[in-house]
Length: 248
Length: 166
Image 1 (cartoon, rainbow over the protein chains, first blue to last red):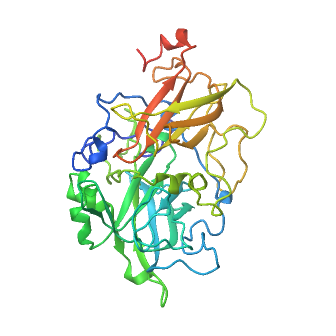
Image 2 (cartoon, one colour):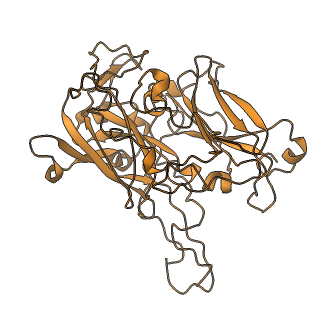
Image 3 (cartoon, rainbow over the protein chains, first blue to last red):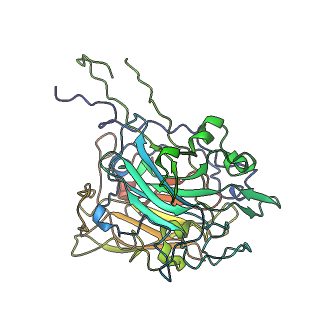
């Protein structure tokens, strides 16, 4: 039956739930004060400018791109820290896997220090840890990488705020309007609930969605812990046809 | 079910943070040797149709201070108004014009792209939109990436009928 568009196939993207995402102006996170839009948002789409987006071939990746324990090693030894594998599935809101999409991630080292010239925290740099990696999801939408657990660290904000251990994620999807940046936290970390950046999100269930689960069964024996972090991108809605017999 | 609701919620956004350059332009911030070149740095890889332009995107905060710690991405059509199609998963071929660029904001709050002037693309009503480039801006203090567009001053006639501008 030509002309029928199944859920997630070719319809417009679901509107973003702006109450689920953090608001732009969140006084508890002071940096937002002058960086939040003052005007209400305009609707731009959906046109090809929003519904298409860049894609990347697997061949672009190097063998160590998803190995933060080794990909910046200066002397051939491993980065210092709690070894772990992070993996997960990129899905859309219709629970369909998003294959062949680029996932980038970056993080502080085991002491909570970033490799950046503006980083001022006193924790030591690890000469063998850069803190950056990337993957492209497989046919089923899965990515994985190896790293060390990042440390918590203090930041000024209101004087003595602390970030919980976290990993930053950038995900593309297949449409530029699906573009997403977020952060992954660790199951059971009490620091999550005192973080002003986490608290920019109002809904506890939404915060829970950013919390990776310890996957005890998939730990690597005598080697690495394992955490699972699934990521959901905007999905496409159905386009209804009056001659459509089956439901969605 | 006539109006199905999505079964999953979109993963909520979090700020890219002050060190977004580590993750998105690692070579720019001296994390070298991991990847050969920052992704999106080069948009033109061969002979392409169209007018070559240098695009400088200046970003300021609400009190006029340049944003020095963010990243700007752009996505645009080629000179004929067509977007690059999906890359084959096993391909390493870069299209002559990628349509996608990513640049770090400098200390002066400027991201500079070497690209081409985009052609016109159909809008929601099927009428051609004015030439434009989609922008996505992320940085510390931005809780969810800012999506907007830029248009061209020298396209006054096309701009007069564009559905976003009018």
